[in-house]
Structures are given as C-alpha cells and as structure tokens.
Image 1 (cartoon, helix red, strand yellow):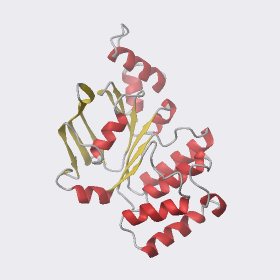
Image 2 (cartoon, one colour):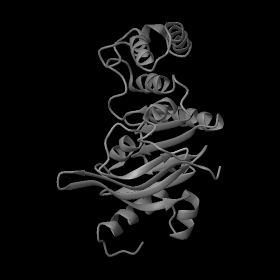
Image 3 (cartoon, helix red, strand yellow):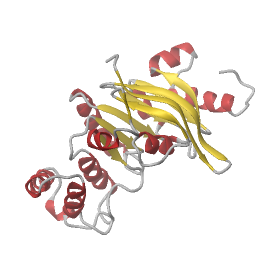
Image 4 (cartoon, rainbow, N blue to C red):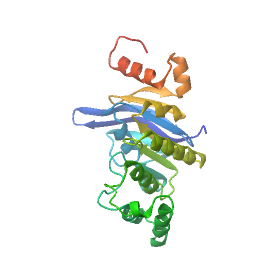
Length: 248
C-alpha cells in the first residue's frame, strides 16, 4: 500500500496565457482510492487527461510504475482505463455496439468481445442494451460506460465524475463497485462534485484554479483543521485559496 504507482511532478498545462494546471505534485499509491475534488474549472479533468496521455502537458513529468509515461505510452494505454465525464460511449450506438467498437480498438479478439457482450447481457436487460445509449437511463448508461472502461482489465482506473446526474441509489451502487475494484487490487482516481462521496476515498486532493490546495486522508484532514464535514473543509479551503479572510 505504500508503493507509488503514479508520481506526478510539477505537472503544468497552459492554453495560451491561461494556466489550467499550475505545477501540481502528488502521487497515487498502489491499491488506493484517491478522491479528486474541486469546483468546475479547477483543472481536474485536464490533470487526468495529462496523466493518461490524452492531453499533452506544457511541462512536468508523470511516472507510472517508475517509468516515464511519455516514453512508454503503449504500455500506459494497456494498463490504464479511463471513464470520461462526458464522452464515454457513442450515443447513437447501442450498448452492445459500443462494446464491440471499444473492444475492437482496444485489441480484443472477436471471441473476447462476444464474451463481453454476453457478460453485459447478464447484468442489464437485453432490451435496454439494444437501445441507443443516448436514450437509456443515466444509471444504466454509467454502468455500461464503466464496463467498457474495464474491458481490458486495467490496473489503474480514472473515473471522471462517474456519478454525475444519477440518483442516490445508483451512486451508492457505483461506489460499491469501486470498492469491489479496490478489493481486486486496482488503483483508482475518482473525481467528483459530490462532497459526501469523497469520504469514501482513502485520500483526498482538492484542486482550485489549477492549484493543489489540500491533500491528505479525509479523517485526518477533518481532525487537523477541526472541521465537522468534508463540505466545511472544502468551503474553507476554497475561501482561503481565493483570498478570503477566514483562516484554513
């Protein structure tokens, strides 16, 4: 549990004069759930995309299992899974077609893809799977998106706002699945807007205006800063980082 599977060093992304991520440093330990919290525009998605190679960074370094991610990009693609906040499935394809498409570009054989489709039909009614994913309930769509993310059995999983727009029951079921993945030894980074969810994580990062402003275990942070909830901790951290008068 003490081994760092990912090390992020001075990670920076600029778009012209705008700095989206400002020299961020953190690590992700093997087998842990890392909660990534921040308001809209904080830089969470940009950071995730730079780590998994979907977005070129301006400067900084990412090490995965001790290897430079840029120099071992093919291996990184094999061991990482990414569930995007907005673009995880093609909405005009049905779920089975999405499994076929993403399985194909991931290098799975036709036999393996067929097996994955059969596996999906054991957990979601086939009638729903044959509808366009843009038309199925959000909870089912998120379930299919996670399934697609996990098809290659990645050891490192990035979940960007995975419970956005779903009801509390679906959120609870989704976190049950996240814990199940952890029990399998997976390393997971979860970004979220839902402050109550972060308490489920082993460690917490708060990003604001591209800067990492809080890092630590949720219970320890609450104790150290004398807060009753993550919501209080979050609000105080943002206020302080924004130049507010209240101490943090």
